[in-house]
Length: 577
Image (cartoon, rainbow, N blue to C red; front, side, top):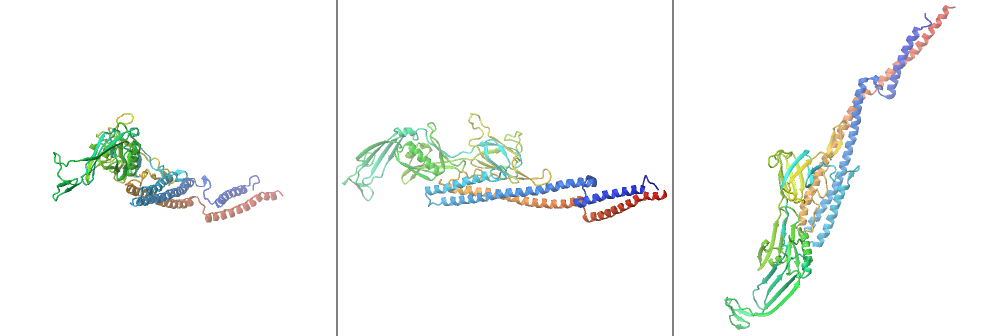
């Protein structure tokens, strides 16, 4: 029996301390609900649980990201719904304008509403945002950089890289051009002579028909009118038997009827020397003799605007030109004149005129057609000479042109469209006098599209491309129903615009459906991983409670035993009595 070292108490105390430590751990598990509260509890388990928790947190945020992406796409799709409605309304107005019961003023009123809708479409494209990110102006589309072309659009299947082509011939507009200076025009009309008919000879000198100053300062014309007064009868064979009431035959040496001059008058004036009419692409305009050059130009300009053409500024060296509004083979210019003389009075060369005889009148017209651009695609990293270059156009790539617009297509939905620069072609000269090689280089990148992080790890993202939905990219920025063929052209352009918007909306719908499936998959994966991490780090409360009960009993027993062990040295006092 020892007094200084009570080994029973020491042993009991150590056991009690171990029980208390275990009981503290169990109570920590019960209070926290985790079986792993410290790295020492389960070193490998805490490492696994840490990684899994990062994945769970990432999946939860990725699901939220996907939902945010759906919201952004729904915002864009809602705006496109209104754009569709506006295009439908413009098409309806175009059909209304095409009706022949509408006057020019009514078409102009219709055009006002169309212009307003076009402005609104561009406003919607410029201001539709989600979290300050613009959705419809092309900001969320991949960037493509190129020289001397605009309105570049690429489909989703166009790989990033370098593409090259050469413009061999630029698109050309149809054109009719006047002479730089006018000449003297002698207009003579021979009538069939019946009772009291008038034979008129008109001599009209004109110079520089569209030189305003020349007209205003006194470009002159003169007209001599000679009136013949005949009264004759014919026999049954059509021969003249009476002249002025007398039975006679009066012919000159050539056998022609001798003309007796009864009245001659001459008048002069300034300005346009002849009256006449012009029809430009179906739009008519009447001109009166004596109009100033400025008035003539203004009337021609109006006729051009209504007829779908454009008129140049007067050039004293090159004359005046009338162009088709459209570039390419679809842009014709047809000008019809009431007479060849009147066409010449306006400054057009007789050599450029087509003559038609209608009801005994010499009508004149000019018909001119444009031409589309001609290009060469550099395929399989070879240029048009066979030299090695960088160009990813495939062997099956083809192109089609519509004026300045070019569309390149290939397999697998490859499509690249753009508008060429006016006059840019091989062999042309730029503003500095340098010869143009006509080469256009496209650098297609994957920069610019909206990247949605839809996974818990790096690289698990989804690229969303939203094409620009502006009037320019839909090629309806020049819709004008006031032109003669304007309503028909507008219907074609608006049909194409509807197809464009529908395609963009379809793509957005595909993105939305994909994101909905993505978020469901992320939620399911998060659920399963949460279940897995729960089996690793969550405490089994039933088992832990059993352990707690056991340790609690052991602690009570240890306290009791320690109390008994501490009383053992007291027994040594009995030996000293």
